[in-house]
Image 1 (spheres, helix red, strand yellow):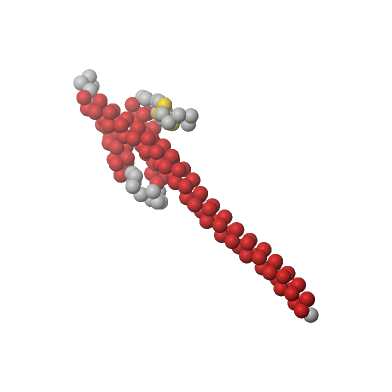
Image 2 (cartoon, one colour):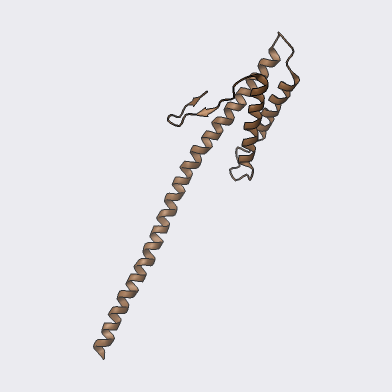
Length: 141
């Protein structure tokens, strides 16, 4: 009977060790995966944020430059529609929540800015072609 109890205890110890190691392995893997996920998410967020920042910066520089050019134009009086569209684009960009990454309508507002930019380009008879070159960290226009 003592031999049977000893064999049973050894068997239980083996079964319990397997379950214990499985649990420990799961916890270690979960912790490591969480850590790697945070790092990967941070890198992705930084890259994506930089792309959006470059795009919006381009739109703002474009709008401010054209606004100034139209006001300085001595040949003809600038169209009120063009000036109004440029001011609207500039206002949309200035209201964009750069500091709030969890803003619900972040992408929605970005799409509205892109649409307004295309409208301004159409009014100015300019090709609206903004691209970020994926092979290099440079902008191409």
